[in-house]
Image 1 (cartoon, rainbow, N blue to C red):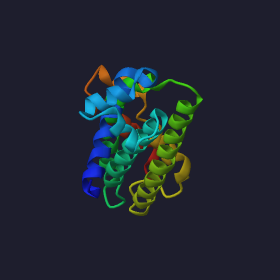
Image 2 (tube, rainbow, N blue to C red):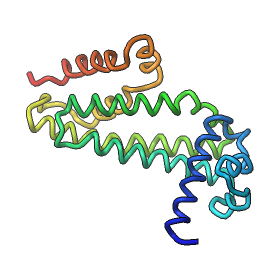
Image 3 (cartoon, rainbow, N blue to C red):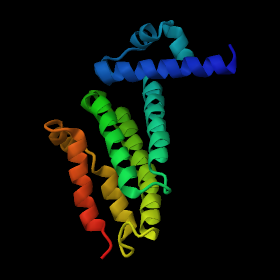
Length: 192
């Protein structure tokens, strides 16, 4: 099997695994169910991933990598800060809306918990670094106050689109809720 075909098959398995884990949870997901969803034999899934826990880890990395690529484009230091944050929060809100309700289905043993913890930590470190870059660029352009401590602000902004906020935003247009959040944020960040 060629390298390109093998990579495509691996991605198909990962996408099927993500759907299965989100639908059935970790404990009820089977390699057979993933194979069925992919349209291949169970032994083929095992060729790519020797265990369900390794498949969960790879599926999590696959999702997080996609988020990093998308977030990196949105959080470009060349973009106006308000526009970049609005786009990022809208995107993360949609991702959390897709995965968030099913995320708790991943409850499992210690190994599952460690994978989820590793992915969350990696997400925070990577996106916070992107956020720091965009905040520094915004500070240099005079969009926000120059004297701000960028590190903690980047961490706070990275975690703002969280499940409770998204739940509140469901009761009104998400865009309006995000605009109110941006207004509040920019009141605190404004140059003085």
